[in-house]
Length: 300
Image (cartoon, rainbow, N blue to C red; front, side, top):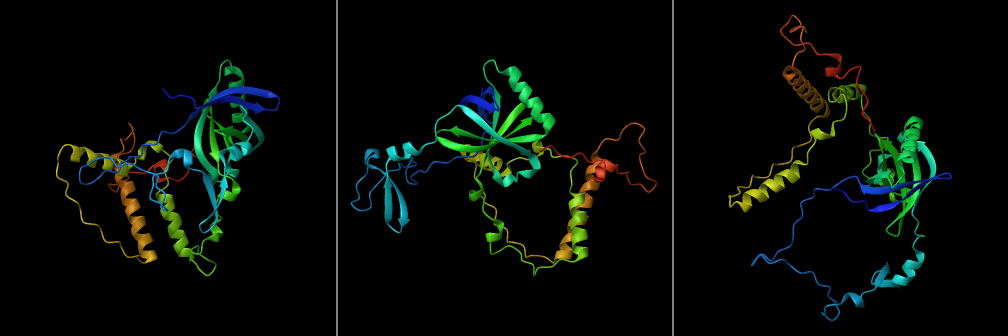
């Protein structure tokens, strides 16, 4: 069962709602250890001073900020602790904004906020009010001595909270030299075909369960086979494909998307009483299946 990593209260005007903080994700990264190839023993990491080659104990290590090559300003732990934000147990809501006003680039790590002891009713009231208002709360909270900017929004019956990147931490896309400039032009036909391709690949709604980390699954499968003593035959690396003609690529992509859509429609069970054919031997496509009209918006 998940354990809360922080307890406190949401400060909303003069109202405090006790809450408990839980991480909303559990990463499934495959982790490897460094081993000595000769005997398979795990490698030890040691802190060695390059000046004298001696191992350095933790008590003899200080923090230094490099201000120029090989020139550092030493900062003590006591000096840093004096700058730590005041430890509080409140999530202070500063304002409410529209969800679509927040670019996803600003989101960092997701959490769940659940009601604390005896806070079920005020918590439910806050969830309901925010749901009806359709707003996202922007707040500040101190977690593990670090002040965080966070966004809080209702998600079903609970509150979801995401830590956010500050504005000066987000890279300005105009700072890249590789960004296309005004001298690059596209034709109306190219844009129309690209829009058709997007429409043909548009789903009725986002279904996260259909996506899997295929690389992690392949790595775990490789590990299991090697643990069983199976011989692994490496496949030759594929040569990178040349960039095709844009219009030819769009036309080929549209044809492939249409073929995939027709095959998917053929596999769908027909409803009782539905017409089996359209008179030419092909199955009819419903409005929803073609992706036009009646398409429900995915929930943010």
